[in-house]
Length: 274
Image (cartoon, rainbow, N blue to C red; front, side, top):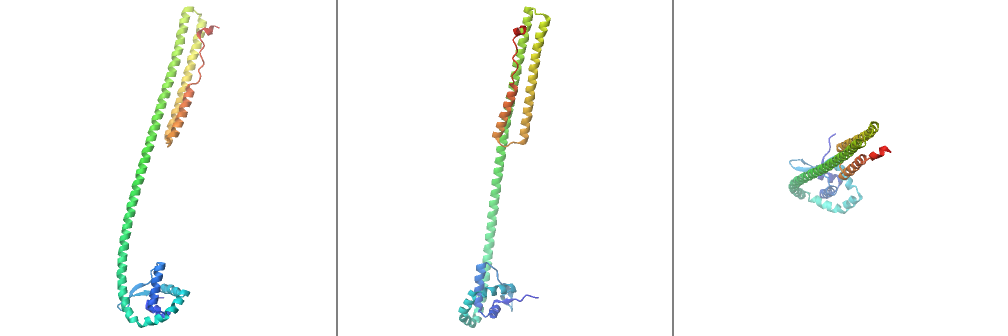
């Protein structure tokens, strides 16, 4: 079933109101509700606005309200007068329609320009936001690299310090034991101690040397564990510099504590004779 299209004049005649009044009502509701009502159609070599069934139903619903009925009653006299002037009004409407078309074209052109301008501004803002985001990411990456370099440098310094401390401690203990052996050898020459007693003293000294070497191996093992734990922390990429420093200080202290385990105080050479 084809749709029955009507002009504003035909619908106004059907409803028993003036064309002018109906046009004013449609214009008012279009602006109020931001609607698009009617389509241009060429009828009898003349472009005329026609209304679809759906649009006719919508317009009738507006006119069925209490306010529209009151307005219809108040404008009934005016409608009769306007009907007499329809001929002249049609000519004026044609002129007005032409002017309206020009205004709509001008408005459309202005709207297109505004949209283009808005799109250009939006693109610039997006580009600016992207540039700012890239700069912030670069700054964050640079800061992270600096923190990692600082943490690595601190770790290397602590490792060097621990190695130096271990070497000094080993040298000190070896020097002490060598000195004891030298003293015992001198004592042997001077006192001509019996072979059995001398062997006993040398064996005790050798035991002390072995104990020192075991302690040195323990220190090396602790240092290796400390280095392995530091390598594990590097792999985890801990972001906080303060946290890295606290963990490194704690590990360094553990290594120091391990390397500072008490060594049995050697008995003086003359105590072996007691």
